[in-house]
Amino acid sequence: MRCNNCGWDNAPGSSVCVKCGHPLQAGGSQYQDPYQGVNVPNYQGGEAMPRPTVINAQQAEPAPRPTRIVNSADLQNPAALNATVAQTPKSCPHCGYPVVGNFTSCPNCGTSLGAAQTAIQQPVQKVAEDLGLDIAEEVKCEKCGTMVSLDFSFCPKCGERIHLPTVRAIKHKPVAPPEPPKPKCHLTIIPEEGEITEPFTNDYEGDSIILNRENTEKDNRTITSKEQAELICEDGKWYVLNHSELGSTYIEANRKMAIEPGDIIVLGDRRFKFETE
Image: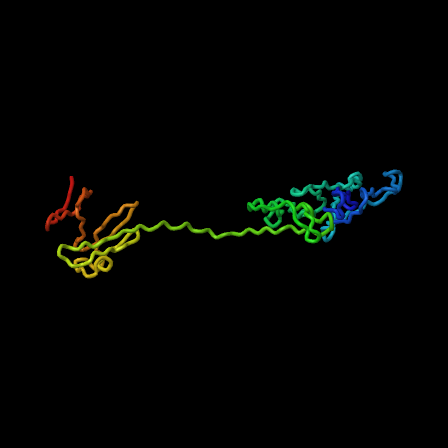
């Protein structure tokens, strides 16, 4: 059913033009030739008649006509003064609606016609695609409940203005990855022969652990209260480093152990310095 306001072909049974919102009348095509029955010299032999004006229903005020500037060269050329200035319509990049005039956005779907488009000016479907959201191609009319395409500005059944859904992007704060578990180790006190004491275990956690009298054996005066030694974990392997001023941190060599030049070896009660060439 053709609209007699804008000439748009609407689906059969539509009561309102989906492009301009003009009411439609049932019963065949409504579009009437504006010069039908009028005598115009250049049109079926009648008198001249002004061209009809089509007002866009979605624009508050009609777009201003382009102003033509006449210079001195035009005054010398009468043919140029009688020339007709015509503007070629450009199609909306989103809905294909033919736009004529100085519109900055499509009067049908609101898409910006300028070179730069912001996220607010872009159609809902385009914004949803950029955000990775799934938006239906139809929206329900709030008045009559008819499912209407997002390309339409008015409901074809009741003429209600179609309001496009709002797309909101929710930004989530980045979640820091969980920290890897800290390495753990234990030191168990071994009673000497004839010593009356219960063996107990000290638990430690971390990549670097400072050992002293407080966190090993509180009543042992041979362990310094400052820093006796340090346990270090690197690449899953544990190392011990002496911090005592007297150098009273030892390892019992009950297995094959690597030694470095400058290491001190205690044999009985005698200390020896290990060197190499």
